[in-house]
Length: 399
Image (cartoon, rainbow, N blue to C red; front, side):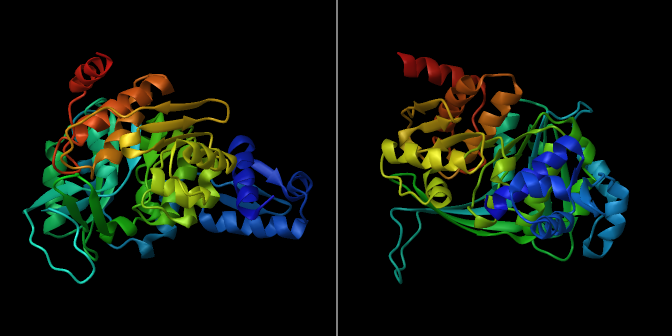
């Protein structure tokens, strides 16, 4: 068994049993006890386990202790301010917890993408709230009111814009961390006017500086959630750490692996549902996707990496689902495309909300396909359609 699979196996046993022993692991994984101890050292460094003589036990989630240990890495962290911001609209416990990012999107519409070294004129330029986490929360909150979003921004004008934006959205509650030493994340987005296709460059900024202390300050919201959703726009060590925390808390874990990072591969077995697009699926599976057949090959390879369920989005070719036994293709719904930059986030956010609402996976995917088809008809990645419009779109598609 490869190292990444062995680490995933040990994590799952820890989550289930709380304690596991070196000799037992050595026998189960068919490796030396010395190798097992190296694996245990890595788990202890990640902050989710503590070793003792002869074995390893699950790290207790005590926010106060971790905050004390990590205070030096916390630049501008005020628990009282966070508490004031957190419960924005009501005291209902969240059902969908989203660890994500906030970016200020600078969106430029062009007739076509420029060639290397070429200068072209823009049709228009606009400034929009964005970031995959914020976009997915906006989509999910159109469907379910008990969504909680965790984001981090800089103490700058873009960060102030973030606060104003979240105060006006339907997101049920949010935790907004402000850091005086970093800038708020930003993204440069080019959109082709004729096709709606986009090209995006991201500056992570504060999104890449989240600490364990900040995550654990929000532990009660994670504990209350049924579904945990995250992406890869935050620092990868914290993404992996929070996935482990969510699993310990009994959440159904959804990962949108965008932008792709090979550093998440070791954690795929901890993911219940993966939602890659075609490009991300190619990078994960190492299979070139050119048609539905190659997409099916890629999704099978991804499943063998330990992911329990996968929904691969394929743009105007719809979506593909696989859970190890059932393979199903969902056709796209015709849309008057304006901007595709928020399509993936609309799909993932609405899919997660659909599952929280109690829809079956089949129903949730159909809903998400319809929702994404409506999202591409709006300009700006954070401009999400209402849930009511989905029923109308689905009825039209059946006619």
